[in-house]
Image 1 (tube, rainbow over the protein chains, first blue to last red):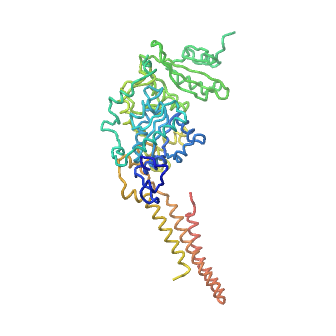
Image 2: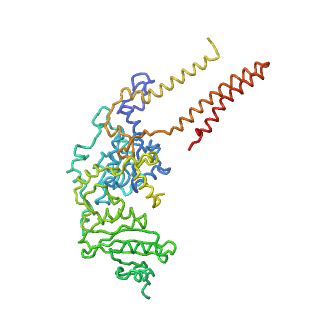
Image 3: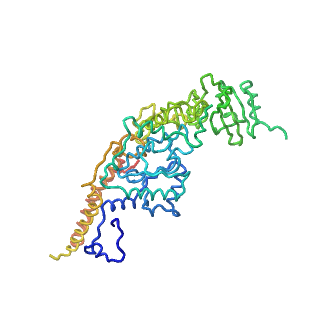
Length: 206
Length: 207
Length: 125
């Protein structure tokens, strides 16, 4: 499993130089491979994207062939938090706590426009993107994204995980809330929550 | 085409309450009656209890604030008589300059409990006599005001980071105590007045 | 050494080794060399994302204990009847005596049973 493909015209014994009964691989490859092929999702489905998630999990698009056979509804047994749907401010402490309760290694997929940026709900009640609250690995655009979109996001996450290094401790530190009770700096939250697109015109009151 | 007929409840209301019924209108087949706020509870009670009216189902309680600032804020009660299959909309005009207060109708229809909490949360209308008036859609300690008022900006008063910080610090269960949640196990341990309140809440009287 | 139980011993050894190996490979290695990244919230019980209200340890009703103890008593009575049955088969001459003896035994325990019944210990509610 090295970086160079084996020579097709020479036998394995000649290529490897040792007995053809042994094969070597990197530990990180093995570990990452098993992690990617058995990502158990925690479907944090709040709204319409949850329906598309269910459709992806159903037989036509079938999540279980990607290792997501068992959807974990307890964060203790989950690897990936898939936030499917808009997140009201009232639900913010809930998703934060569930994220904190997931053991390492953990990743998250922000599914849909609302989870990624607030979507069409640029108002007083909705979180403008869950990346203001929890760290996100893959964003899936769409309202809702098609099942193929979610599957592509899962494949991207698998690719990301395959490239991870086992010895890099920075990857697995718990990113907790800061002393001010926020996950990102206030300036960053304000900057990424700024209205864009049509929201720019929706500033009226009275 | 002749003008649409108002519901017979209008004439009955005028006969019974006279001046307290300010005006009425028929819109898209629905009858709307404006009444005075001072006698609103009496009028709604009569609409529920009178055998000829019998509006036993409260479909909705809500409020309207119009775009034109000089128009008053309207409380809207949507009533339905299940036996007669009749609808009626009762409105109360509230002057925005004065404190917004209406008598609660929770004692008439139990469903009004959460409906009035929603009106309080979104418009700031206080309900006299409501057993549990607190926010229902926003969190208990929400400090930005009343979101559906016209002077409330779409994205709220605070900055996004402040809103996120307050949201993360809010405890969704802060109102509840353990006794109220695990009641079956601790029923014999809770104080007498709480037990009485719970019994009354279920059947309307101490069983 | 080839008693009829030797194959069972081998079976037992295989089972124990399999169990230990299963645990060792899946959890044991993790327990030994795995990292621990504990935070306070991570260790708290899962309550759908809400802060935990109250203790999960509730008191059980004492009725469970009563039923369990009564079962033990009458089960032991039943257990005593089993070797008595064997003896009854063997001692043909004293069958009447043996029968009366067992009846007296059951009668003594039946007095206790009636007491328990009248006392209401068998009432579930």
